[in-house]
Length: 218
Ligand code: AP5
Image (cartoon, rainbow, N blue to C red; front, top):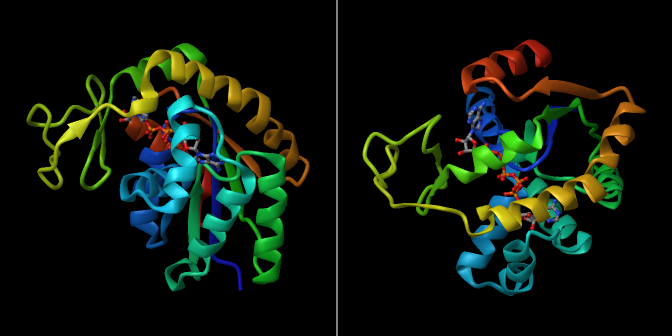
């Protein structure tokens, strides 16, 4: 039985997390963000977190075997049975092949891979203004999605912070990693006929509507 098994692909700051959280809530499936899982492990200072910290801080990809093991465990949880939105995974061809194996062994397959398209200058602008809640992970933007009260999360009252890897030098490194290691996945999924492109440059509501139109009843 195949659920709403989706992958959100695209450069850093393209809005994958913003849209994935909303769509997952509407469709009642988990939003699985490998970035969030890794940051959670770093915060908890777990062995996985200690292994991942240096890669995250430098804007480098965490080794495939670490991330694949983490995703495998997450997909085994019961809430992922009726579907999931994978945000930020896979990010290399090796991860995509591993995901294929994981899904095949569960009798499932990807419904679609959504590519969020955004120019580099817009990436820098978006990440330059991003604020993240330290308690619930909710995201804001100084200009496009400001919190009602400065520095405080509307949803849970937690404090807002600038992500360590959102400094311009690290963002540029993340963009290089994207181009070199993740962009080849566009051809990988295009070849299978499941790649859908969304123009991520419009306002949040516009991208949301485009996404719904793209996915239709899926
Ligand atoms: P991760 O957390 O996945 O970072 P990313 O892919 O670089 O994506 P971001 O979270 O930065 O951006 P987003 O596209 O989700 O945009 P968002 O919605 O936040 O990964 C972090 C690190 O973890 C990696 O560098 C790597 O080290 C490691 N990692 C993770 N996965 C890995 C993997 N599979 N393999 C190896 N390593 C891995 O939006 C950005 C901002 O813009 C927000 O402020 C938001 O409010 C605003 N915004 C969103 N949409 C719009 C819009 N339409 N208009 C205006 N503003 C908008």
